[in-house]
Each structure stands twice: as structure tokens, then as C-alpha cells.
Length: 458
Length: 125
Image 1 (cartoon, rainbow over the protein chains, first blue to last red):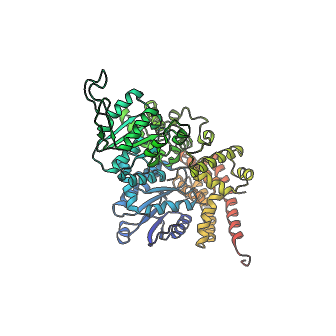
Image 2: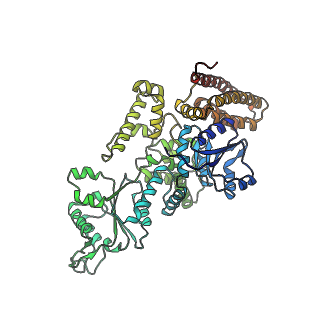
Image 3: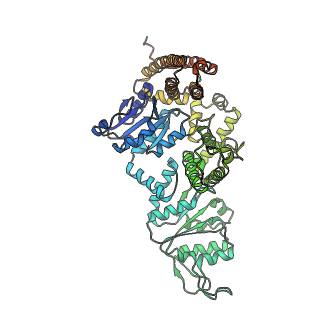
């Protein structure tokens, strides 16, 4: 277990004595020196005592602490984590917007707070850089999954290696490719091409370019994307759809680092990095002999996985707010965020179409909405009966052991909870697993047990 | 039988046992919430909506941390009722919820005390 070495000072500001005792003890256990307080101290206090962390209850008696965050940050550089009882997620999101580093639900196990706190202080400079990088790339969210992915992108970006991005449809694979391009600091352009959107006979000329006279309609030279991306990055989306003949030609390009335009005789140097993406299982395709093994190992020097929206539930409120703002401006509307209960419903939904589906749902709700808040009835007209508890099935995840175990556990737990009608005690009795262990497994896999018990985490 | 989420309770108890504060905290929870429920009833009788909301919010947070979900849910319902009710001292629904919360809180306190007593070495009184 990683222990923070230096004695950092933390304020635990809460008007209830129990909170102050619990969270002070928790912070002490990871090396902080806690100072319990029942109200926000004066500016003078902050100026005389360097504070590293503030655990701040969102409501202190009649004081709305969220509205004070920006003030506190004017004269203090502490990380602020707001705490709330359940049912105030929209307020917690507002706190993060006001500058809080995160939020924590008092209804979550107290020891789940500790990794969050530690991560804030484990190379906090790097953490800030990652968040700034995500902002610059237009990638919305602050979930652990996303931060980990961004760290990986920053690590692999400058290497120039060929990268394969795996992920379900709608997970933002092109945005990830653009982020890699940005992290590489190359000066050339980012050129994307979708291998499934262009007929095979045209794709070849799109990729390699055409010399005048190559065929009847080729009246002049035309550059292909391999040339257009010179000094930059070529993004080949849906690489799994590439026909065998083109797979062989692409393999040669990558091996030789050169290509010959259609109708040309002189090969040109490839001066661009290649990033590919797919939602297909290329391992399976290799076994079925529909995708070349040698090409796979050329394009998958580094493999990144674009997480599904189900794996970054914490980002849903942020994404909803982002898309809602965008469509509000576009439509001249002023709809507000859905209420907590409705956010819970959004977190329960499976989102098989991932971020793209969420974006479309928000657009529909803004365009058709007539109320004060975003109407999730308009967002999820198809959602009845398709919460993740009811629709997820067990699949092997690209033969990755841990992902496959997770898949199995998820599938097992969903079946178990269904058999137990959602009753944890009954589930424990049926399975012979301790109730607390079922609870932990559900939390880890983001499976809701009853309403509001497994989401809203930061 | 009190409805406690054992996952949440155990998580908290682990931290507090390590610092030797579980008993102190349990005592605080029982004493403070017994006082809070009395104050809450008094605030309702006095038709003091603002004070009532402050108390019930504190109760909700305290119960949430201990995994007392049914208590926290009752607190949430009371908060909602307080928000929409002008004359809280005449609200039958509120009286009903308060009565349920009182009963549930007593059960939770009893459960928490029994947990602490189980942990005590046998030589302790």
C-alpha cells in the first residue's frame, strides 16, 4: 500500500461531530495531520497555515459551502474534496466546476475515499498536467479510467510507435487518436480515413494517391492520405474492415516505410505515424483468417483500449452537462441539468452506443424539451428494461484475463441479484458469499444494488 | 432489526478500530442523534422549518456514514416534505415520518452498541 510520506495538513470541515471523527481518523491512517473544524475558517487562518487538503461538507448548517469554494481557492492552494449525503450529485458536480478536486458521497464506504485522496497527492503536478491535457484535447470527464488512459496517451504519444485503439462503437476512438497526435508534438497534420466508409476500389487511391493517366478518369496527380499526412499522423478507422488485398499493401507500406501511388513507378517515403482503430475482435479475425496476423503485429505495437461509457460512469453527469450546454446554445434554450433521481437513472442505463448515444440522447431532449430541466423521458425512450442489470451478457474480452474475469463476475453477479430479487442477504445466502463481499464486488463492477448505492462516485 | 449496510459500516469500523475511536464514535452517534431527533420534533412543533431542515440534513449525513440507509432515506423524505410544507406543525405525513425515524434510529443505535460490545475483550465490564 502506498503511504504518503510527508505529514500533510488536512482540514475536515463538517458541522457534525461524527463526520469530523470518522474522516479525521481516515486521513490520519494515510499520514495526514487532520484538523477538525465545524465551519470554514477565516482568510487569516489560511494565510498562516499551509493547508494541503480540505474535506468540506457541502452544507454547513445553513451555509452553502459550495458557493465558498472559489473564495477559499483565492487564498489557499489546497485540494478541496466535497462531501455530501446521498441525493445531492448535481450540487457535487457544481462543486467540481467551482474548483473542487472531487467529491465523495457519505453513503459510500469510508475506505473508498482514501485511494481518491492518495491519487490527488501522488505526483499532483502530473495529475494537473493530465487534466489540462484532457481539456486541450476536448475530452470531457475526470474519471479514474479516463485519467489512466490520458496518462498512457501522454506516455506513448511522443514515441512515434504504431498504435492500435480497440473499443466499442461510440467510445471516441478518433478523439483518442487526435490526443495521441497532440501528445506527439509533431508539426504535420492529423488525417483520418474510415476504411469501411469508402468502397475498396476507391480506398486504395485515397490511401496511396493517383498519378495522372493511371486510369481513364485520372486527369491529374492526386495525393493520397499517406502523402497528405506527411510529418503528422494517419488515422485508419475501422481497420478490421480492410479487404485482404489492401491489408497486404498496407503491410508493405508499414514494413518498407514507403508507398507507390496508383500508376506511379517511383515509391515515396512514408513520413507519418500510423494509428489504427477498430471495434472488431482482431484476434478472433486472425483465427478466422480474415485479418492478417503479420499486419496485426505491425499495427498493434502499442494497444490502447477506449473505455466504454459503462466503465466511466462518473463522467456521465459531466458529459450530459457538456452536451446540454452545447445544444442549449445551438437551440437558444436554457434547460437545466436533470434532478438527482434522473441522473441515477442515466447511470443505471447500459449505454450500448456509448458517448455517441448519450450525445444524441441529450440533443433529442434539448430539441424536444419544453420543461425547465432536461427530460430523461426524452433522452431514454428506449431505456425501459435495458438497464445494465438486465441487458449485459458475458463475453470474453479479447482473451485478456482480467477483463474476462470481470466479465464473468459481472455476469454472475447480475444473475445472482436477479435470482435474489435484488436482496443482498438473499444473494449472500444463495451464493455462499459474504454480503459485504457481494457489495464490494458490485461497487467495483459499478453494478447498482437498489437505487443509488453504486454510483455517483468520483 | 436495524437496516444497516454492513459493507459501509465495516469500512468505517475498520478505520475507527485502528485509531481506537469506534466506541467514542458510536457513543457520539447515539447521543447526538437522540438529541437531534428531540430537537427536530421540537422544531416541527415550533413550525421552525429552517432549523428542522438543518437538523434533518445533519441526521441524514450521520446515518449515511454508518450505513443506516433506511434512516437516511427517511431523512431524505422528511427533507422533501419540509421543503414543500408551509405549516410543518400540522403535517400528518411529517409526524408519521418522524415517528418512523425515531423507531428506526433506536434500532440502529441498539445495533451499533451491540457491535461495539462484541468487539470488547471479555475482561471489560
